[in-house]
Amino acid sequence: MIFRPLALIAALGLAGAAQAHDFEAGGLTVLHPFAIETASRATTGAGYLTIRNDGETADALIGVEADFPKVSLHESVEADGMMSMQPLERIDIAPGETVSLAPGLGGHVMFMGLDTPFETGARFPATLIFEEAGEVAVEFVVEPRPEAGAEGGMGHGAMDHGDMDHGDMDHGETGHDMDAPATE
Picture 1 (cartoon, one colour):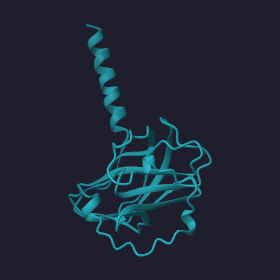
Picture 2: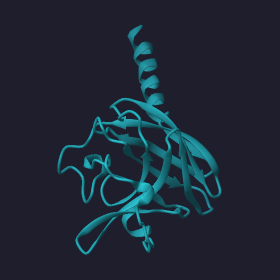
Picture 3: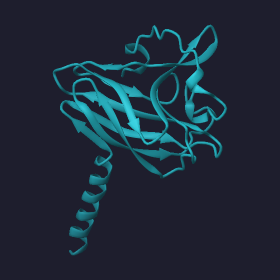
Picture 4: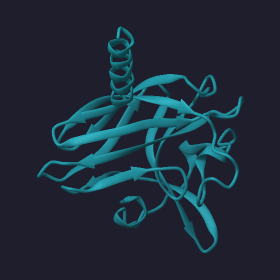
């Protein structure tokens, strides 16, 4: 009989740990922020997350802050058979909508100027900045690089940004429809 209470406590502890990786602010829930492990010489990493708006007011992710020289929102796009990255000024989240930033085509957080690679299991804090909800402290967990072919489109998990200079990139006009690729 003593094992049942211990099993229950262990199960509740694991459930709490799983839920601890979701973050809430107002009507928004940020689900499972994660980054992909990087190559040993990489100076840039990518982060992903899902945002669910259970509120009655539209909101937008307008920035991300973390302890790296530069952090910004980007999207990977394909035009005329060529892949490129463009900066995103905002990611709109309508009431009742869920928006995912996931490996492949679509939005992601770029962490630039890494001194050390992202290693599986590592964690680092960041602050998401929303237009209405304000600042939301989150924690990104570094996950293993997906197997080749496991991602659709241009996966940042498999891309080495080490030689790219994002500061000098000509990102041009974004002209994108965030509702199509990043909305579930």
